[in-house]
Length: 330
Ligand SMILES: Cc1cc2nc3c(=O)[nH]c(=O)nc-3n(C[C@H](O)[C@H](O)[C@H](O)COP(=O)(O)O)c2cc1C
Image 1 (cartoon, helix red, strand yellow):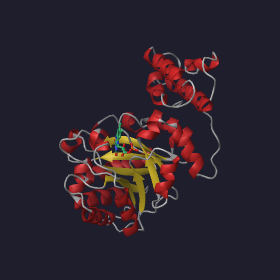
Image 2: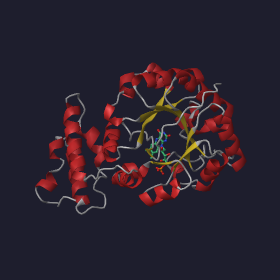
Image 3: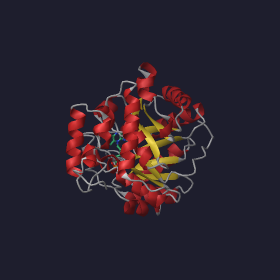
Image 4: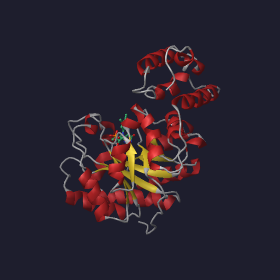
């Protein structure tokens, strides 16, 4: 174990959650345009994938995405330390440990949410990771798992894990049920208990507590920032990405106003540049489908965009309904 207490970066008021199949590098490039001050996270990458797989495929990113955290899945302190070191060398701003994923695949590998049942192991994993790197090491965890769901359990878990020296806790404010619920149901069915996240902050004021789960708009963000150090948006950021731009405006003094079409034009330029490296327009365009959500013409544009993606049309076509005045630019 280390007695090294990591200094946390100054401002973690806004983050976008790690989301498998969603927050790939192209999605993060898009989110960065919308929220220049947000912390971004990779999808979870297992230690096995890094140590035995195609590292550039799992780890490459564009410098424009920074600051970006690499989220690791694993439970072997030595392997996690090795992967943390690789992540730091690759240029990641933070290394995060996943203690929240409830999927069967993850449970078979004995990591993710089931690790909550072994607080000393989580502590040792984080301590080993911290010893290996100088960038911050953080944890993203549930507030309980199965019948380990009392306040006393959560308090003792946080207390034990904090002994590793990790000072940034991202709390997905609902417990996980490991049997009987799918990962999707595990994001809906167990109730959100923000009061527990608040109590963690009151009990451990020296820790940075980032609240995650069910935050969908600026008003929600303000409500949770009243007692915590930051908010992390997941599904809302992906499905209604303009909320990131609204949060950026509301939470950071120096935010420059944006418009959707300017963001689209930057994404078209990015796509054209990525195509030169063999990336197909649909790999990038799929992340943009929610951009005009609730705007006039949103449905027409989404249909047009889906069609473009299906036939792999060039990115320069993406704004055609605006050019042809089928939709008025928002
Ligand atoms: C499609 C999808 C994939 C996810 N993958 C991960 C993951 O790789 N690592 C992780 O810690 N959480 C993952 N999550 C959980 C989110 O990070 C977040 O904790 C959860 O969605 C609750 O936040 P929200 O209500 O703002 O969406 C995933 C969620 C979704 C919807």
